[in-house]
Amino acid sequence: MNLIEVKDYEEMSERAARYIIEKVRQAKTLNLGLATGGTPVGTYKNLIADHKENGTSYQNVTTFNLDEYVGLSGDDRNSYRFYMNEELFSHIDVVQANTHIPRGDAPDMQQECLNYEKLIAEHGGIDLQLLGIGTNGHIGFNEPGTSFDSATHLVDLAESTREANARYFSSLAEVPTKAITMGIATIMKSKEILLLISGQSKREALSNLLHGEVNENFPASALRNHPCVTIIADNAAIGK
Ligand code: GLP
Image (cartoon, rainbow, N blue to C red; front, side):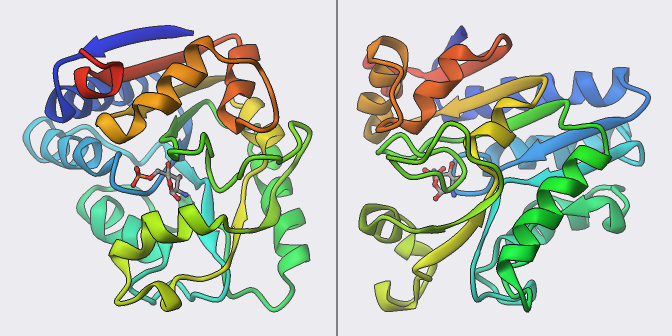
């Protein structure tokens, strides 16, 4: 794993955006895996600014998001589809039909898992996957204990994850209890991974990732076995 140390959230966001922009500009077509949460918001802001100022085009890009809450439709303000439209898609020239997010309101959620996994494979897999990390080491919504062999699947959200994400909802009770997420194996199939880690609350997670055991109790540790991972972490996360 290649660790890039940066000063703060702003610098992390700029570096991450530059990394992505370079890939988008170089590749004839690019399958880009995207993440939600607070961490990538600044990166998306930088992508939007660059699109407006420098005209980087996303017409050759197909996107696949990591996860979605079960029970929320795409027009629910708390869904990850809504987040992605607001934070990125509606501000760049990506073709809306080429943006893929698991459906949280599919009539058959088990089938939706299979369909999503198949969709990624049919497109030839993900070239670059952007990731954040939960304080308990979750990636996507793969909570501690998830098998490293997991494909896209349904999960019961850990209470700590629901609490961490409650800030987006009007109350904790409103936070869904289940989600659909790419599995660890799905993520590991990505050709390249860019993991962003910012803030003191992620310090222990970063330290576990760098120095702890590779173990299913800490989902992100699977990344240690991936041949091409870049971590961009800020001083607060590093502990400087
Ligand atoms: C959420 C998302 C993850 C995200 C993580 C960290 O639950 N499902 O994809 O990486 O938790 O979120 P944040 O960036 O807000 O700290």
